Image (tube, rainbow, N blue to C red; front, side, top):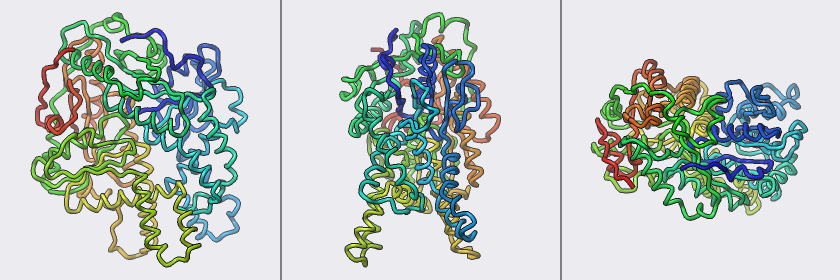
Length: 598
C-alpha cells in the first residue's frame, strides 16, 4: 500500500508528539518529519523524551541535554532530555542553598532522598513542560517542536503528569515526601497549568499514534487513543509504519507477512477508524543516516528493491530451547527479559514461561511494563502457569490502603487526612511499584518467576529505586551481614538470569549493549542474548526482504562473537500469539506453517 500524501503533516501545528509501542519506528518517523519541515523553510526543534534516546545515533552526532544544531539540515536543531543530567541539576538547585549550612551527614541524607526515580521523573518533566510553555527564550525562534517520545506507557505517564501535579498543588498539597523530591514544586504551578493548556489546544498540539501493521501495536495505540483523549489530547492521527508492499515474487515468507499485515489493517480497531490514517512503506534498509531518512516518507519503488542483488543470508541454528534447557535444572529462579521496546520481550518471556510450565514446573509470568498485556499474548490457560501484571495504578492504590490501615490506624481524624493527602502525591507510585516488584523477586526462591520488563529507560528507573532501597538498608544495618535486599538477589547469578532481547538491527543492538553496561555498573551481569524476529533465519527470497536479511548478518555476528549464550529466533509467518504458537517458538526447530494467501 503506497501513498503520496501524508495527512498528519498537513498544516502541522507547533507541537507534534510521536508515540506508540516500542520498535514501531517513532524515532525514524520523527526525524524524517523534522527534516521535511526544516526543508520547507521552517525552524524545527526535535526533542526526545525517551530515557533511552537514540536520536543522536540516527543523525550520527552527539546531542545530549542542550539544544544542538544538526549541521547537515539547515533549520533543524535537536535536544535529548537526559534524565540523569536533569536530575543532577534538580538536586543541585535544592541542595546548593543549604550547602555549608547543614552538617555533611544531613546533606548526604538529603542527596540520597533525591536520588530515586521519582526525582528523575520530576526533573525530566520540568524540562518537558518548559518546552510546552515557551518558558525558555531560546525556544522562541522555533516554528515547530517535535517530540520523539518514550514507548507508550512512559509517554502516557508523562502527558498525564501536568494534570496530576496541577491537581496535587491546587489541592494544597506539596509537602516534601516520598523520598523528599517535592520541594520546590509550588513555584512550577503556572508552568504546569500552561502545559495542560498547550496539550489540550488542537491549534497547537497534534498527537501522532505510530504503529506497525500488527494486531498488538494497533491495539496498543487504540488504548493510547482512549487514555489521551480522556485528558484532552483529542487531535490525533494514525501512522502505520513499515508496511510491506505486495510481493511480486513467489516467496512464502513475504506472502505470509504481507497477508498478515493486510489482515491487521482490514481489522483496524473501531476506535481508530474515525481518525486520519497514513501508511509508510517498508524500506529495504534500516533507517539510519540522512540518506535513509530522506526516503522514509516516500513510497518504496521496485527500483529500490532491485537496485542490486542481495547477498545470501544464513545463520547457524541457535534455538531458544537451548537456553531453556540450561535454565530448567535448578527448578526455580528469577528470569528477566530486558531490552528496547518493540524487540519482543513479552513474546520471549511468555515462550520461556510456557515451555517451563509445560515441563512440569510452577511458573509465575509477570510484567513491569505499564503498556503490556500478557493475556493478549497467551490467549489461553496452561497448567502450572500463573500470570500477573504489576499495574502502577493498582499497586499504588493497594499501597495507599495498606499505609492507611497500618500507619494511619492510630492517628486522629486530622492525622489520617494529612496522611491520605500525602499519599495522593504522584510520587507515591514509585514506592508502590518497587514494593510490588520486590514481592515478585522473593517468589523466585521457590518457583520460576519470568519477568517481562518495561522498555529500557523505564526498567533502569525501577532498578534505580531498587538500588536506593539497598543502599538505605545497608546503611541502617551497618556491620550486620544477615540481610538480603532485592538488589542482592538481582546481583546473584545463581538466583537471577537476565536475558537481553534485541533485533538484528544496529539501533536495538547498540541499545542492548548500553543496557548491559548499565546493568554491569549495578553489579548485574546479563546471562544471555536473544535475537528475535530474524529475517536471515527465515530465509526469504523476496528482493526487499532478502536485502533486509543480508543487512542482519553483521549485526548477528557482532553479538555471537562477543557473547557466549545467544539464541536466534526466526521471523515466523504468523504472530506468535497463543499457547501452541509460544510452544512452537520455544521448540528446538520452530515449525513454519504454510501461509494462506488473501
